[in-house]
Length: 288
Image (tube, rainbow, N blue to C red; front, side, top):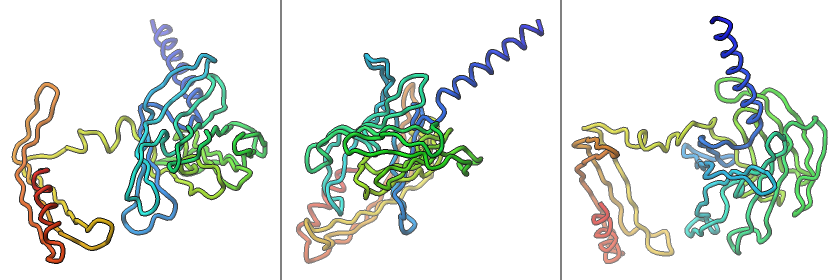
C-alpha cells in the first residue's frame, strides 16, 4: 500500500514537472492577466495596459495558437480619438509548435492610419545558446541574437531571464516563469517604438479586474468622482463637479451581486460656456 502511495506521488510530481517544462519560457499563458507600463512614466499616475489570452486553437499544420483580445487603439497624440484595432499591445496572437521552444508573436495588418499595412511575425528563441543568431522577421528583414540569459529578480524570487536583441537595436525580454517581460509597443519593428515592460508578475484569473475585487464594497463605503467638461476642440473648461456615492445595501442572488447606493452631485458652471455646460450637466445626471 505504501509503495502504491509513493508511486502515485512520483507520477504526479513527474506530470507537474513535465507540464512546467512545456510552459517554461512561453510568453503568455491562458488563465492569467498580464500588465505592462510604458518606459519612463512620470508622476504618481502610471498608465498600465492589461492583456489576456482570449482564445486558443490548433492549426491544420499542428501549431498551437493563443489569440489576444482586441482593443480600441488611440489615433494620434493626445489620444482624443480611437479606432478598433485588429491587434493588442504585442500583436494578435502567439503561435508555437507543441514540444518545441520557438515562439512567434504575430500582428495582423491594420488599415491606415491605425497601424502598419503589412502583417508582422517575430520569431523568439529563449532557449537558444547565448550568442546565437537567427532570422527573426521577414518583413521587416531582421535578425535576432540571444544576448544573455541570467537570473534576475522577478516577483518574490529570482527567475531565469533571456534577453533577445534585434538587429535594429530593439530588445525583447522573456522570463522563464512569468513570460514576456519587455517588448515593442504594437509589435512595431521599426527600431524606434517604445518598449513596454511588465508592471507586475502575471495574476491568476482576472487579477485586479475580477468583479469580486472591483466591487468588494460594504454598506457604508463611499466612492468619490470628479468630472471636468471641456469645450469641444479646446482646453477651455465648461463645467467642473464632484459626485459622492454611499453604499446603502448589498444583496446576493443566485448569480448576481446587487449594490444599492445614494449619491450627491455638485457642479460648477463657467459663465462663458454656460449653455454648453448646462447640456453636459443634464447628461451627467441622467447617466447616474
